[in-house]
Image (tube, rainbow, N blue to C red; front, side, top):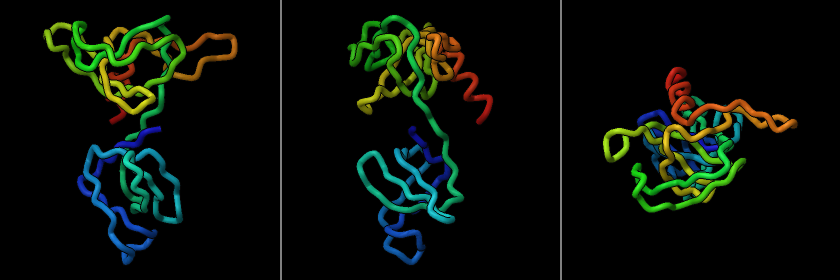
Length: 156
């Protein structure tokens, strides 16, 4: 799971104590990859490996991986069908869905995603994605990536 900080400024401390050494400052939009509650603090790790503690009152948005339901599709480095392909996905592979952007040609909607290797890219907005775990009989709820982003925006 990826968590994106919503607060403007967040201090990361070496221990769950404001008197311990200050390790770093996080800003809105920064991401943490692990997060465990430790009394009124959160023990966190950043993508670059920085490990520390933040106050428990920090707000963040959580992103969970979504399963791909299309047989196969490509992830591009820019929102353009002529852009370089950075990954080829097959049915069932997970990716993180972030937000909607208008393609470079100004016509098609694209979705900014993150592939499991940690790289950001773009998929077409009509790509079929599961919005909940696939059921044992192989049936999942199918929605387009574009509709998932619209649902996320309703709960901001």
